Structure formats: structure tokens, C-alpha cells
Length: 49
Image (tube, rainbow, N blue to C red; front, side, top):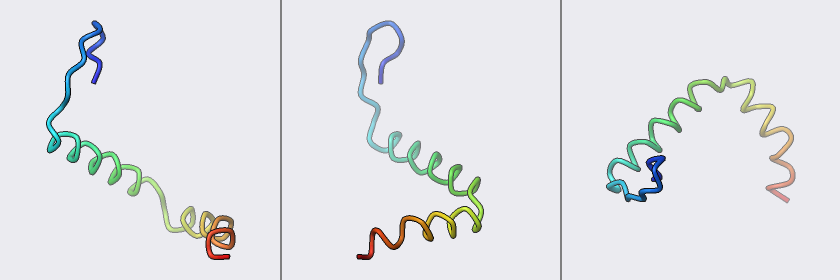
């Protein structure tokens, strides 16, 4: 983490994990089933070949 004044500090792993989970949940909540279906329709064939 850079605090804007050139200081580098490491956040505790639990804080980093919680932040990742919150960001992932927010992104997941913003995406609807239609977006995921379209994503799988275009990306799926390339992944499963």
C-alpha cells in the first residue's frame, strides 16, 4: 500500500482478504445473469477446446 507520501506499508493479510472479498462481491452483484451468459458464449468455446 502506498499512502501517498512515499511510505510503503503492508496491510495485514486478513484486511487484504476482506477487501478482495468485498470487491469481488460488489462486482458479482453488479453483473446480471445475462452478462455472464454472454461471457460464457464468447469465451467458453476457446477455453474448453
